Length: 616
Image 1 (cartoon, rainbow, N blue to C red):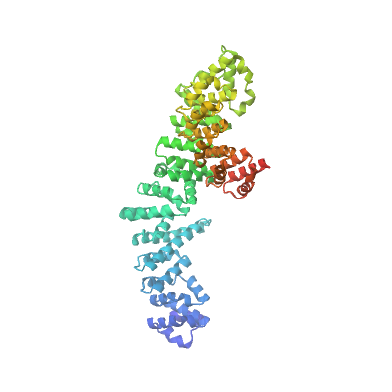
Image 2: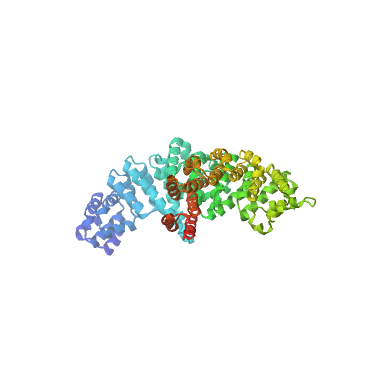
């Protein structure tokens, strides 16, 4: 026979098999498969070629079922000529033999032959659970391998080959989605989501046809995954009205730090207004707190996107501003710059209050930008008096002029040399107090807070004591915090009650100032008032409490300091380092060495090294 010419001339069968070669029959092919593993290598190779050439599906499927019985050389030929085995693979997957089905699935997956992936989709609908599970796992493995290969497809030929394989595989995934309940085999859904750009309509169709099952499967997948590749897909799906709430809730429930960081890193997707709107579904307070901490792990290039994503997740404009206030506590300059740009873009009255806070508390360029923007807003609304716009009037007294110059440059390190001597301010003590009273009564929180700081700096808090006492209940937390600080300079017996009340102020900044003031005032009573703050969730409050109680010799404070140095949040670890440096705790050198060499946050490592140097 002409078809046998190649077999007989290339690799000759022994005489005993001549009849099989010349007279094909299923029984003969089955007999040949039966003895294939026991043949000499040259004869075995010729017999294998004959079976391939005859292409009988049953014989090929039997050969595939027995592939583990073959030597390495024959297994390699099966691997290399998997395309010619397609009829046998299809027959094996459709057969009643569990071994044949599993061996066929293994071979397709091992060879990564995407053109045969549709056979795995056929196996997905098997009534045998183990067959179905193995096929689903196989589709997942092939999808992952193809995704990993994508980054290495650099030439046009590589890219074309990758696209062809992706077409075959996504066709198989599309079939598998229709043929099996994804809640029972979520690997298929997982693999399909990696190719969501190609399978969007198929996935959405499944949502519409079997919403309860798909909703449950999607939710569990995103909630429980540690796969950072899925983060990009999850964020993109926030743009879909069909999936926005499902994906939003699922992201909010995921507790894996790597996945949360990956979600934050894709904040650049917020340029899509649909995705930005969808981020409002991510509104779990616990997730927001964890994700805010995770911001510290991002590099500067991703930080802005992460901040925008968290702010977009705020359910109301007021909550958005509150969230910006929380982020302002960060010591990271890139974080402050990002928050400042968001405050400028926000334009609300609430964001103006935060700009005022930044102008009072920050330093350098960020401080000047915050103050400039705050003044611009106030000038636009006509609130800022002319006295804040320039030098003193020509007809004011010497004390008034000196005060205005001092006021304009107060707390600005770039204008340190322009501050007049304090003596000039004391030319007219009554005028100085009158100027302070005027500032303390200002409608602007920046004015009121700065006036309190000026009073402390110049040592004239006693002269305006009644006003300061009233300001610890000011509506603005910035002002309350400054007032509490000013009270700390008054006689202890007269201020303890007010300071004790402010330790539980709704605002963390005021709490921190109250703890610091009580530390300055002293007295054993302060221990019982400050002790609950050793576990505060706010870094400044916790650090101030630990510092104060360590100075008071409270044993629990030492344990609280160790806990803070091991806190998951880098903000808290930085606060602990501040306490160590403030108190010169040389006993902490061992822990400092660990933080310097192995802490996961670069800022903590740098600060620990600086603290070590300061203690040496």
